[in-house]
Length: 163
Image (cartoon, rainbow, N blue to C red; front, side, top):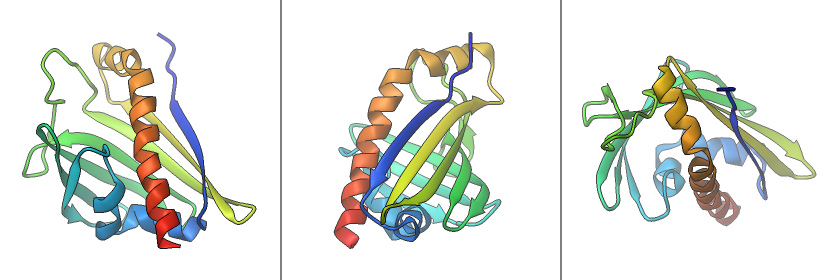
């Protein structure tokens, strides 16, 4: 199967510094990260190269996730590995029966100033994954795009209301 990278671009009515800040602060992430119908509790945020963002997402069920920051270049870009986790922050398989989602997804987000706004580009791709996990990732590509766009709608409201 040809590897595709999930890529989403969004033009936000905020400066790159303000959008970057929404990704880098505990209080901000709690307000916009994740699905609109879920609440996010930030359990740990150490926003630096090699740091972590560990969170609890409460909706119809409770899930935990973790970011492992790879590279942070303020205010231009952030690279992190995203995984499901347990309450202690240990990486676990996706908690869905019969769902072989990759344990790690590499995410990159860039922020470019464009006519007083920010063009944000976000890419995601499986890493260190088995063929089965990669196939699972691509089988739900359209759902991930829809979910990411909804979450970025939360981000858009957040940064525009801060302005």
